[in-house]
Image (cartoon, rainbow, N blue to C red; front, side):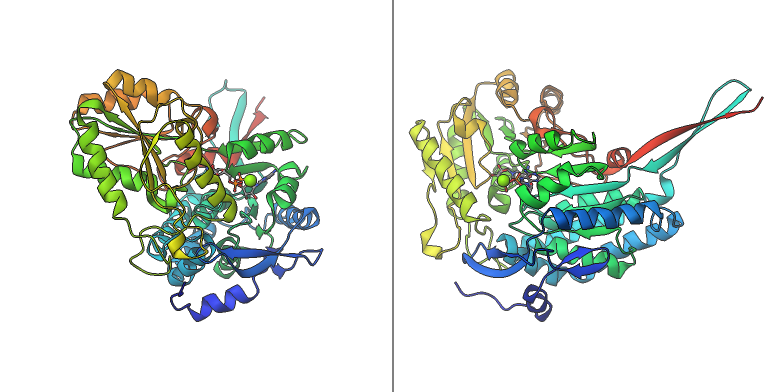
Length: 492
Ligand code: NAI
Ligand code: MG
C-alpha cells in the first residue's frame, strides 16, 4: 500500500530508536534488538533494543539513585510545575511528528493519532498544576502533642502500558508520578515502543533530571516481568489484559509493592426507545469502532430496547458498511488495521466463534484482504446475540459489536451487569430519571449519558470488578502516587 510522505524527523527517529536509562540513550546490555512492525503493511518498520532483566535493573538503579538524592522531589514545587508544563508543550509542538510515529507503529489513523498526542500533552499540563497543591496536614490532638503529616512520594514507580493508546497511557503513568515527586521506569508494549521512547527524550529536553524518567523497551515476559517482580520498585501501575494483571499482582508479592490495575472491559452501550436515534447511532459506532475497537472502554455490547431494535439495527448496519478503512497515514481514513498478526487472528477467531454460537453476522465478518497484507478487519456487527455467548462475555479487542435485544430498563441493567467486567457503560435516553436510575444501577467505573468515550485529565478513571482497581487521572491518582507519614512531636 502506498504510504503518505513521512516527516524528516520521523525518518530520522525511526532509524535508530534507543532506550532511555539514566539520562542516556542506550542499547540493551545483551545487544539484542527486536522488530517493530507497521500493522498497515505487515512490514518491519524498525528495530528497538530488546531490554531484559539487566536493563530493567539498570533503569531501576538509576531511578532509585534519583529518588534517594532528591534531585527531582527536592526541587521547588513551582520548578516541577514548570518542567511538567514544558513536557506538555514539547508534545504539542511535536504533534505532527509524534502522530506519524504513533500511526506507523500502531496503525491508527493519523487524524485520530493527532488528537491523542494533544490529549497526552494535556495530561502533562493538568498534572503541572499539582506539585504546588500536594501537601499534608496538621492533626488535632491534646495540648501536649503536635502532630502533622507529610505527603511523600512512593518512590520508584514502574509503568507497564499497552499498545492501544501508547502515548496517552505513558502520560497517565508518568504525569502523576512526576507531579508527586516520584521517579519512573516505563515499559511500553512490545508492539508500540516508539512514542514512549520519544517521550523519554522529550522529558530530558524539558528539564527532567537524568534518571528520573527511564524507558525500557522489551517484551512482557522479559522486561515487563522483571520490572513487576523487582524488589526495589515501590509501585506498579499497569494497563492491559486481565490475564497479565493477575501475573502483575503475583509478581508484586515479593516486596509487597503497591499495584494499580486498569484491565479489560466488555462495556454495555444501552439504547432506549426514547433516545435521540441519530446521536445514539453515531455514539454507539464511535464507542465500538474507534481505534479499530481496541479500546478498553469500548461499548462492545449494544443493548437495544425491543421497540426500536429493528430500526436501530438497520441504521447501524448502513453506517457501519459506509466506514472508510484504509491507509492510516491518509487524513480521511476512519479506521486502520488492528495492531498485530496476533490480534488479527484473535479478532477473526472470535468472529468464527460468534458464528458457531449461532449469532448472525449482519455486516462485515472477515479480514479486509483487498487492503493488502496489513492487519485490516472489516467493522463487524453481530445481531441475535445472547449475553451468555462468548462474544458477549469475552473481550475481543477488535471492531466487533454484539447487538442484544432487551425488554425494558430493569432487563437492561441486569444484562449490563451480567459480566465479570465493570469498566464503563453508555446510556442513550431522553428521560432524565431513567438516565440516573441506570447510572446508579450499573457497576462500572464510568457511566456516560448521551455520550460515549469521553476522558478528561481531571476525571477519575478505573474499573469495578475484574476491570481492575485503583483510579487514574484527577486527584485520585495523587493519592496512589503519594504516601503519608504522621509525625508526633512531644511538647511536654
Ligand atoms: P498484555 O496485557 O499482554 O500487554 C500489556 C502490557 O503488559 C505490555 O506492555 C506487555 O509487554 C506487558 N506484559 C505482558 N506480559 C507481562 C508479564 N508477564 N509481566 C509484566 N508485563 C507483561 O496485552 P496483549 O497480550 O498485548 O493483548 C491481549 C489482550 O489483552 C487484548 O486482546 C485485549 O483484550 C487485552 N488488552 C487490554 C488493554 C486495555 O487497555 N485494557 C490493552 C491491551 C490489551
Ligand atoms: Mg500478552
